[in-house]
Structures are given as C-alpha cells and as structure tokens.
Image (cartoon, rainbow, N blue to C red):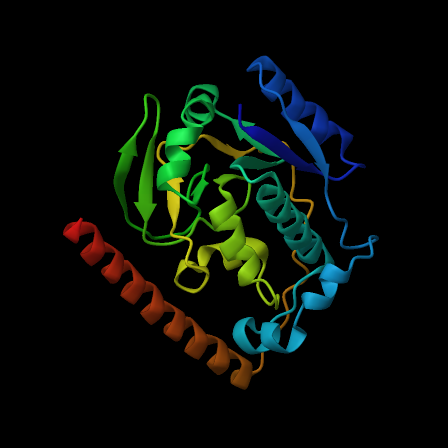
Length: 248
C-alpha cells in the first residue's frame, strides 16, 4: 500500500488528532512527519532562500512560516526518492473525502505509470480551465491550465520529486507557487476533479503570510513585468502540451 506522510508541527496536537481520526476511519496506515518550524528550527535548507530574487520577482519576502513549509515538503521529496516509490503527502489541516481519496490509494500503481504529481484538492485559482485525462470510480485526473495554489495534499512519484529538487537550489517563491510553475519544473499540473480533499475550515493556516506592505512604483512595475512573462510561458507550455497530446 502507498505510504502516506502527514506534515505536522509537534505542537499542533489538535490537527494531528483530526487527520489521524480520518485516516484511521479509512483503515489506512500513515506516518506523522515532523514539520520544519521556520520560527525556531535551524536547517541548512534555509540558506537556499534568495531574498533578492524574492523581491525582484514577487516584490515581497517569504515569511519564516513559508520557509518552514518549503523545507518540510523538500524533505519529503527527498524521502520519496530514497524510498524509490510514489507517496502521498498531506498537510495536517486536510479534510478528506473518503471515496475519492481511496480511489487514489487503490489505483496508485496505475497512476504512477502516467503522472508524476497529482494535486488532490480544489484548484484555488480565480480562473483556470481543465479537462479529463484519466477516469476513476469516484473522481478523475484532470489536466489544469494553472496550478492549484496550495500544498494541502498531493500524490508524487520519485520522478516528480527529482524534478522538484532539481529546481529548488534557490528559493524565492512559496512552495505551492513553485510547484505551480510547471513550465519551469517540468512537472505538469494535474489534479483530481472532483477533489479528494479540502482545507478543514476549523483550522487557520500555521504558515502566516506577514503584513502587507506598500510597494514602490518600481517594485510594482517589476512585478507586473514578471507576471506577464510568466503568463506567456504558461500559455506556451499549455499549447505545446495540447499539440503533443493530439499526436499520441
């Protein structure tokens, strides 16, 4: 059976109990993975953060919570490669939809042959398109034109993890935004529809996004220019994907 890892800060006992109760009810085995606390933990991984690039591309800094979140997922990508098998990564505030989630667990081997990463939650972008790629009994795998803007839960293979690690030498984006940049990391944006899980509304984010700061005009111009370049690359990649798909 696929290995399931739940990212959890040791101090977040209520979250741990909640996600454990859900997985226990489905009869699934899982491991609690101690999250990296960006406020208190020390790790060489934080040296990968590039403040200059973060300001240049996004006009803001990553918070300590965001750095800890990135480090936690980074370590699980390394774990996936070491195990040399696909895994499911969950954050501890996930609210699971049992039928759809168990679809992923039951068909893990077939999915691993076709997909490098599948996001298991609703796409949080304000606008996107998607279409069905692979049917399952209670959900389906869809190709999305835009990334999901979250890391609440996903399936990943060693091939996908290797690509993410290869493009994580320098951190300047939150980890979910990094994963969304499929034209850079070469891990296409697949997700489940209907979703297999969502964020449990009883829990607030542990990450913390910091106070919004007034950006200078130059900063705003740089950010808009960067976003335009990102838009062009994303559309170009999606167009190539459709062309390649039609040739198969």
